[in-house]
Length: 507
Image 1 (cartoon, one colour):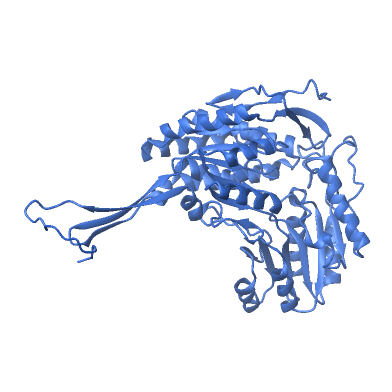
Image 2 (cartoon, rainbow, N blue to C red):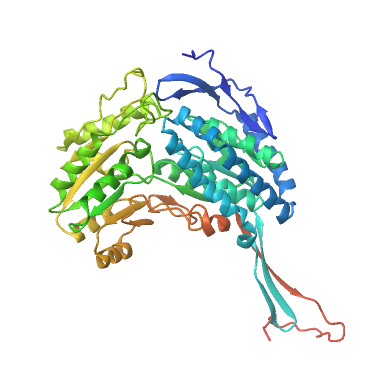
């Protein structure tokens, strides 16, 4: 096991090369399956923050002058390199995050969808033209990049979440400073090397490692024009308020408490399969994970039995695999986070919840120091409990019994989050009413994790999204560009109009 002193230090990526931190501050990066300190990550100081932003500004000056055709060539090259070498990136994600390799690969492929969307950016960044809007006057619009933009990404998707933003930002002509989570920072560095190999000019993609000091430095920088963030609601709100005060554009995606409503006519075997997949995949460390199953009676008892039966068959282990192959679920990201998740189960138990399956105390033979937490199922939890009202972000699934469709709908709509939700039913009328009346940004109908494809946009309502723009899709291109409207007249030398001091009018 590496000691705190001998673990290698993960650097920044500034001006197209690794930059070893001179600041001296670092944070541990663990292998969650073993508990080992695998590396330490540099935590940027003020000089490094300034250097990263200055490099990005120089990169923007170069990149924004590239023709559309040249930019598109670099994007296609990046896409091809990522397709060819995505296995390398998946291994890095598994080693630092803990998720199983197939899940890491799936994360990359969902991010690659946004890269592919961005490859077609000329269509999404073109303006519009109105000829002869008034006599001899043409009006047209052009879309231009913002400049330097910052991305602050979470630990749970170290590749996919940044890829929600940077392909669109770069395609539109901006320069990006990415501040990855200090818990799993190596994926960002690998992506930076890939961009360089694809031919992206130095400074257009910068990786600034760090903690809150780096975040605040980007929020306060007068050079940074926009901030994209995904994480918890309190931090999303802080970033939105802080960056907005300095005149920046902000898209800040916050937390969630996603409900799955199950009507009595639903196929309970299908529902149980999907509830397990959506509740325990990636160890529940997903902002779109199903946290609550709303069982419209009389299905709760039968559904709980089916879910519990499936949970007992899940295999927990090292996400990289072992002699028995790949497990179903890996560890949580840190010991601190594991203890936080366990604390919510303790709260649920104290508040009267019935622990049907208990993941506390889970261990894996040979990796006893890993950050393990087994799949947990809770019944009869009062909705007044903090364990129901707050985001747990772990493999904890709660079943709430409701008597009617309306009771379940009201429960969802009364919550402060509005990220994702789902309904399972064979009743088209009920599904249609649900999608119309539920106050949530992303809705699944017999789909448990309704993450939109790249040409639509990702984002919730209420305390799950701060700012007006969602991630990727048309929203993304609107966010990373600003429009100019040009009114143009080329005078006919044979037909001067003379002096007219009146208010301009169309004619």
